[in-house]
Length: 208
Image (tube, rainbow, N blue to C red; front, side, top):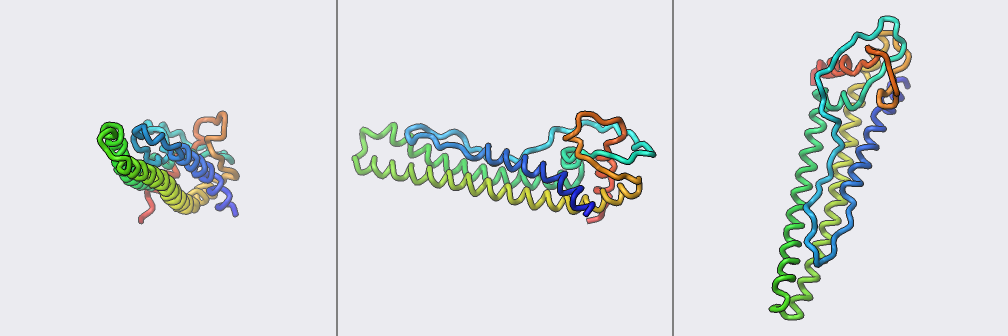
């Protein structure tokens, strides 16, 4: 029970935050048929800020409470970096697929705008149908891309949580800790209370 509550609560917030970012980045209203669409926006994973060289202060010997920063663990641990790389790869792949389809639609819109006077009414009507079809395909691709990236993100975050759980529990028992809190929800903590670097070191030491 200690393990499930401690790790799941920590990473649930990170998962939900990133999922919201995906939804905001991909649920876009399509442009009118006469206007070339904007460049494709791939569903982007929410990446932690760039890390600076950590200053490690030892945990006080009598400490009963410690904190961890999930963003730090995600951005600096080997497992976290691998997760971010996988998410970025899938995001880029889906973005390229959407961009290719938007390029096709832009070409048709340009053709209609520049050649409408020379085309038959039937040809113009067919162009409009093709543009509408591509527009629908693009919106569907955005929705499915968002779901694929979000699903992969959830699976990978759960893997990291499961991998970190016994490491964190063992460290807490070793140091006699009673509570480990999420650093992002705190206003202030004394130096040495953040055990993120120690958890990262132990995570990276685990043989695959």
